[in-house]
Length: 177
Image 1 (cartoon, rainbow, N blue to C red):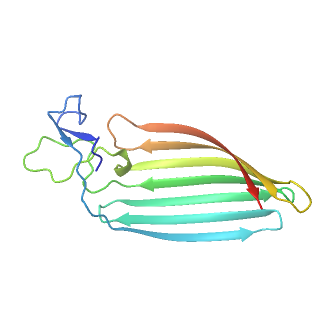
Image 2 (cartoon, rainbow, N blue to C red):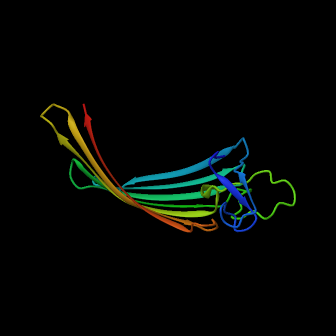
C-alpha cells in the first residue's frame, strides 16, 4: 500500500471529485507470486538471430498477466549490432481492485487506487545499436550503445486515465578491459 495514495468511496471514485469518503489505500500484507517463462533463441546465420519470450504471471491477489516479446538482432559487421524489439503485456485486475468503490454497506477490507493493479495492456517497440571501438591494438575497447523506444499503455478500467504514450532514449558508454 502506498501511504500517499487515497481511495475515494462512493461517487466517481476520486478524492476531490464526488467521492463521499476518502480512505488510505490498503493492500493485503502478504503476496505470493509465481511466474512461468518459456524462451527460444535461434541463430539463422553469423549475422542474424531472433529471441522469443513468453511469461505467465499469477499471484494470490487474483492478478494474472501474459507477456510476449520478440527481438531480432542483426550484426552488420564484426563490431556493430542492431536490435529490434517488440513486447506485448496484458493483465487482469487484482481481486480487490475496483475502478470505483460503492458506498460502503459494511467494512471494506482492501481498497486501491493503484493503476498497476487494474486491467491493462502495454505495447513496447524499441531499436538499439551497439558498437565496439578499439582504443589500441591490445588495449581496452570502448563500447557505445544507443536505444530509442516507445511504450503505449492502455488502462481498460481506471477512472481518470485511459492511456499513456511514453518515448525514451538512452545513450551509454563503457570500457571493456
